[in-house]
Image 1 (cartoon, rainbow, N blue to C red):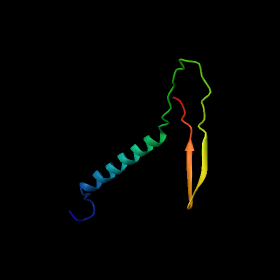
Image 2 (image 1 turned 90 degrees about the vertical axis):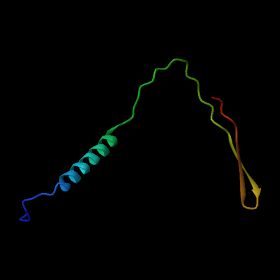
Image 3 (image 1 turned 135 degrees about the horizontal axis):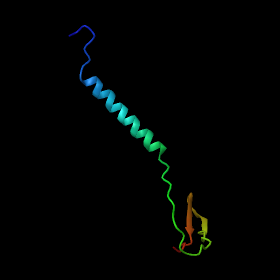
Image 4 (image 1 turned 30 degrees about the horizontal axis):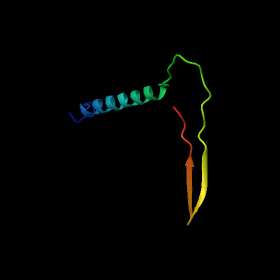
Length: 70
């Protein structure tokens, strides 16, 4: 059946596979990942770390910072 009316079985499988992959990518791109969390305690202002940089010589900069609790 080489008259152009025969469709090989592999072609529909490849098209179906590409359609499934495209649908999965579209579904993942639409997923926002949002969630709702309940607040159970008083909110405190977070403490920002204090960053310090100093010249250590020989084209070197030494960085240090304070630890942030929590």
